[in-house]
Image 1 (cartoon, rainbow, N blue to C red):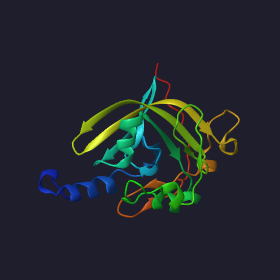
Image 2 (image 1 turned 45 degrees about the vertical axis):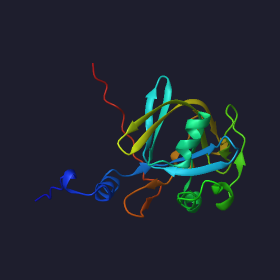
Image 3 (image 1 turned 180 degrees about the vertical axis):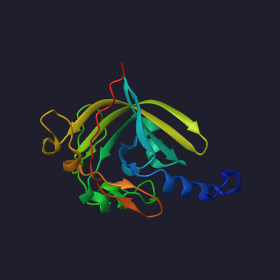
Image 4 (image 1 turned 135 degrees about the vertical axis):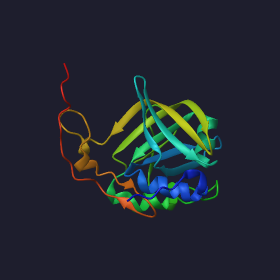
Length: 197
């Protein structure tokens, strides 16, 4: 027995709830930006993934018109910070619909730290920071797809393996689920890809 829930018969809020409760877990892009006036902004986005490997491009979708989107439009730069479980309350704190002049770094007790290649600070406490230059913006329904060309990875030595890649059991990134639920770092299993001749 299955229940069919046609999207056309549901309100946008109901569809949003179904999407975010079904497409789980979703990694969190903790995006830091700076306005032209120099005001810092920090906000988490769970509509986030890799869009291209060559060139390296990440995508973040901003639903509605938010400060992050306005800042990226104006400056062409942003940082995708990857937080850890111990920062879950700070990530959540920065998710509020605060006024433009509100500094989420300060409110959440976080440290803005200069990036290497762009004029937007990263979150010093985050294990991974991906510095991005705006590649493109695409309006999709009530969202804007922000495509950022990766210009630098700044990764804490404490989470790197000998092969130079981050270890999930060291980073321990939280994820978003449905409702007010969050996911913690998952149990890990490994499979080699099939070698097709």
